[in-house]
Image 1 (tube, rainbow, N blue to C red):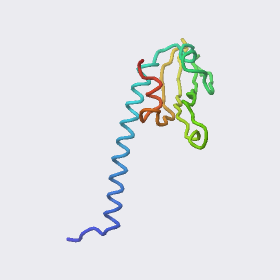
Image 2: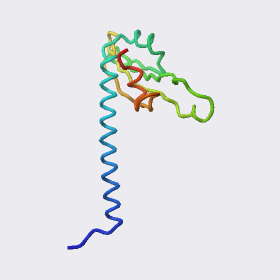
Image 3: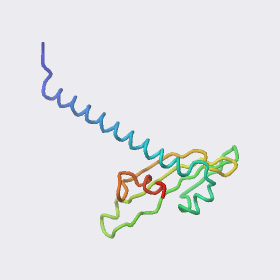
Length: 126
């Protein structure tokens, strides 16, 4: 029986570590999506923008709805190079013809001020 060489074992260990990290990232994304969806799904889009700020862009959809990209404002950005690492949340909102948020996709979720998810911090129940 032949033992795997050191490079093969190192490669296998790296692949295992990447897989486990990917599982944690997926779990984090699912938790964030649950928090965001529970807070804003079916909310009137005007109410969302009044509460959380204007969208970065939008397009009308053929079914009478709309699609928006919304980005949070930078939370307590510090002066200097640290401010380059913006703590933002970016969402894609699909709005039905009645003006209610029908679907939400988290496009970008930076680490928050006190947790691993800026989106979860913004949309957590208060």
